[in-house]
Image (cartoon, rainbow, N blue to C red; front, side, top):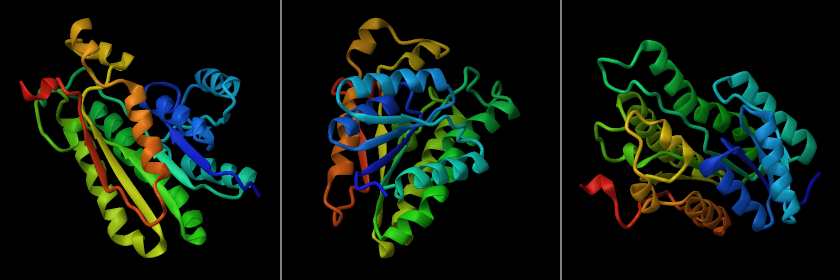
Length: 244
């Protein structure tokens, strides 16, 4: 059984998930990077390893509860523990209005953003409860606290639900020594923003949060003493376009 702290990060190939994995590895965690693209995960792990960190790729589609359970079992078989779960897998769709967002689009957003988060949390829960300790960090969104038209109904619904389930986890699981944190970031300058119906300008992106800002936040929350629960972090760039 591994004596190292073991972190499992979903959506870890790019963006916030990758930044979180990099920051955790820099803090001494052994990090299992999950996502749907094996080649991207391999590249990310190689970069972390080259910097002296410990990282392993493990492909996963979080939309599958069976895959999530198998993923957790595989990590436990290798390491005997999962100390931290970071749920950073998430998507949005181009057609975001009620008039344009199809039933299939709704399903896809909810399957990954919400149900995917539930699947991995359920997968790690037995081992964490048996250990009497464990941390879950769920990446939600500013849209999970403040409703606006831009993110769309499906995305806003999914991230609002992620915030609620994070707090409900704490209501139930604190008795077992577990804790969860919901991160609610405003705009982060990641390549996914360029897929928006109206992409932000380079000038606007230059003022946004950086993935590494969220990586540092994830590592900070994960590194707090076991008696401390950071229930949520609402974080935005100082120049926050959501206030306009």
